[in-house]
Length: 225
Image (tube, rainbow, N blue to C red; front, side):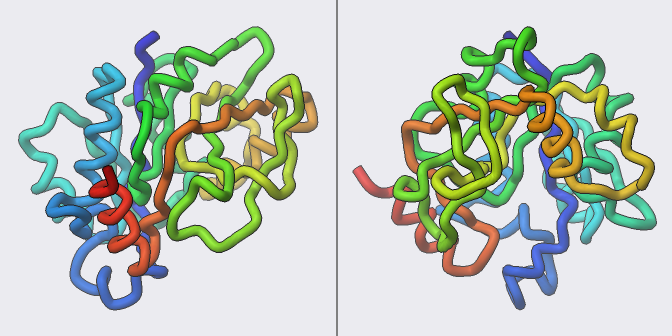
């Protein structure tokens, strides 16, 4: 199953501190390559043929970097729209529901997360399928987790699993939100109430590179054999 991909790259990267003073977070180098290239590798390996990248902070740098890539960029202007608003804004470019979404500030070691999501996707009982990582298999993450999963694969808020930034989601509920800028958490809450929010547990390791410490941790993870 090949789905279009929304790659989130519009954020300010405030957790990166001085590192994002002159560049957007997706252009920060990890193992000699910009973060966004690591995300695009995941997409290419999964066979994604249509990728839309949203931009806001210092968009011209990412546009120049991607100029020769087979991706579509869309600027959020004048205001950033957050994940839910950004996805809704990009729907005319993405095409039919459902879609993959992927954050650009994480690095993976293990099976392709998008491929695993596509294999497990069941639209008859899911409105979204989130790739989640057990806390013990994360790098650069200090919390207790975002979700708890039950035997049927449905997830609720709670400790144990960290949302990785990768998912498959239907998009019809985006139209029910009145505000222009909003988080995907808004529609996840509605899906959870309807028992339509599911999670898949990632078997590999995952590193949060949303903060400076994550850069070295990701490089160590990628070099670990």
